[in-house]
Length: 204
Image 1 (tube, one colour):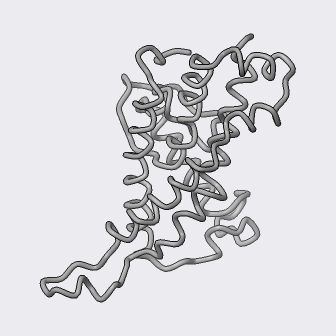
Image 2 (cartoon, helix red, strand yellow):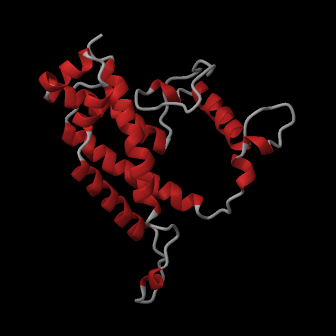
């Protein structure tokens, strides 16, 4: 795998921990604004002649612009809508895409895990056994630790700060309980899905 030289499970773990900070701060920023359900519903499109929700169209157009400026030339950067992206016009430039980057980092996780225990992974890869690979990749104790850590970070990063000693009376800009749910139900399962799909092609 390109750009995998020098990677270790420890270096990847440290990178994933730093990415948690980016995701939490992004959610705190999002929490400033009201939820408008119509923006997410493809049946409520406000753009005549254009299918899909307003959010989907915004993301598609944003990704098309960023693709022109080299965002997706980085191996850890992936578009949500990769079809028909324009070619890059300039050399690569770094832009954050917190959740997608975190999920697709699974490729690097899978590569390091494979190198560390290829004799364990190879039979399942050769058999195209997704369930066996998922079992090998799943460490419930680690996942529980991640969920506890992101919840604690959300409590710390999201607290209202003032000049008194009451630390904002426990008020948070974002509900900390959202983070373990987000990671447990979406981020980590999708990351493992990326890991499995990568490993299935590892011996090709």
